[in-house]
Length: 234
Image 1 (cartoon, rainbow, N blue to C red):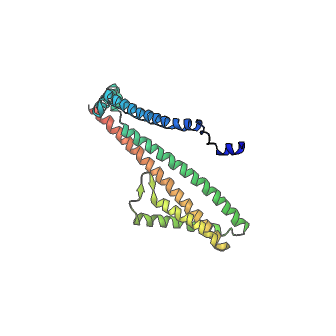
Image 2 (image 1 turned 30 degrees about the horizontal axis):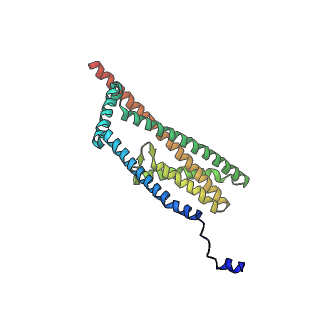
Image 3 (image 1 turned 120 degrees about the vertical axis):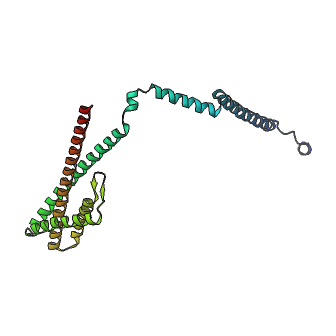
């Protein structure tokens, strides 16, 4: 009887803890939304206050121009009158000359090492007689290619660089790489042709740089004499 009474008795009321827990969540969500909107309005208000303090974009540009004028007035006249463009050109010329010297010496070192290895290879294969013929043919070919390139491309002189000689040197470098696909005699001959042509290119480059430096010195001396003459007449 007790068992049937317990079965027939109405169920007890559900626990109130989960309801309280879930009942608190809408309040927290509403509170977070209120805080987010308050943060946005406060940031917009701060931005408006900062813009009002600076007086808008027009006032900012005026302040920048005023600062620029003050800086220009603070710079000494000697700094303003200094020829910055000529100084920049002089620095560029010095950098170009240093780059040319570094390139020249690196090419000379590589050429010396390559020529030495080619000589050792020729002696080890008993092909010493091919060396002078290859060197002579390479020098003559370099002169011929240089004259031909000057006739075809007369205005190929860059700023401190002769592109004709660069092209001729690239041709002899290509010949040296191609020599690996030939037989023994052809390989030795082409190796020394490339060495002779490259040696002639370096010699022409040296004479060209020397002549350019001499012309620059003559121009500087003539300008100095002209300035002294003008000062003497004054």
